[in-house]
Image (tube, rainbow, N blue to C red; front, top):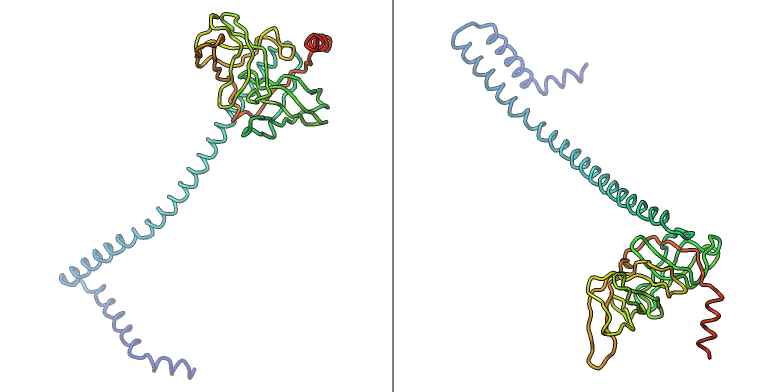
Length: 276
């Protein structure tokens, strides 16, 4: 009780001022004098204006919060659209590859590319299929875009493929339009070359190049690419023909292994003939 008395005594001026303000407001509210009513009206209008101005401040913070929510929602929607677009492309790619599998007369094993070595003259890829899947050395590798290469090594569950962009790669090929045949090889760069084509043979820029029936390793009519340039060197009997591959080796992710191997009888006979 003594503390309360000391507190009131310490702040008595404030208590008196508060009491007088309350009494004044009570008198003003009960006074119907014209001047008092005018003051009261102006006061109410002023207070209302102040409240309206102050009410905008919370709205600014609320709008900022809503803006953050909308921004995050936009980010989530963009990410979802990106994932749906990637899923659509993957679906189209798999549909195309499935169509290839249905058209092929050979047994086929699908394999993912799990490793790449495409910075050297002997470019290779590592595949997620091996001997347990029926994969053996010298089996052709293809994709929906055409010839990829051939298998050169296998283990139980993996295989290494030699790409067409490899200096040791060779394939019998021909011009699809005219039937002119030659040998596909690679000397570096982004193109392969159709070699051993005489100057007088009918070859044009834009011609499609496919594997020929003379190959013991690859089935005939697998697309290799298109002729991109033709040149002739003075004194040479053959043309220099550049072929742009149909396969994009930098982005390849899946391939098919054709479960066929060279005819051993033919291989033995041809090797015997060469050795004589």
